[in-house]
Length: 186
Image (tube, rainbow, N blue to C red; front, side, top):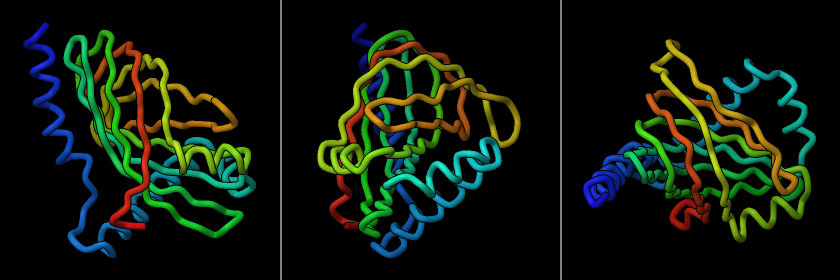
């Protein structure tokens, strides 16, 4: 058990490198996040064209890049993203971190797209940004090869879509995820 926790903590360091956005200046980091957002939305629209109108008609949406590692009974991950508030025309850059317990093994790099169906859900997410829940998925993907099984879900007036970029993972976990403003970029 101690060995598994130690390995999970070591992996957090590795994830930190994968989950930090590119660029050294504030402008370069913002540009990298905006490019990630554009690329992710393009992928999502190719797989689910109806999501485009859902996002365009929603009060706001968010796109996050996340990398995580699961080692036996523990997992951890981190990432970054952006929230677009359509009603105020405001962009909020954010970070995310997650920890989980359960059964899992592997690592994956994935994107989250969140569609906020009410202004209250959008405001709450930016202010509090906390999520807690269970997750079960399987991924074996590298570039265009392989596949991943994940689910979209609707919770508290937010629809969440997950796109796996790369990874080899099998997990059934209970995890907590924290989202918070990326002060350096806002």
